[in-house]
Length: 96
Image 1: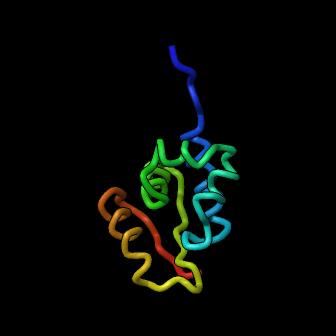
Image 2: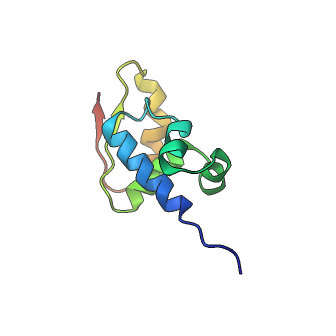
């Protein structure tokens, strides 16, 4: 029987915390992995992209604050908005 890991949950928790404190654009996959205490390969094992992780975090039922970074172009948020709109019923986008 394989070992049970809580890495996925740690990634979700780290993402929610970091994006709440900063902004979507300011948080990197490296930041998330460092906060969660997991290797980058584990991140990509569970989630194809940072946006997919944010959608999973929102679907967890916890509030996710998705702020566009101050120096991030609005069109760079398009993939986030589209994925959120396709998978999550209620979300809020704000400017930093």
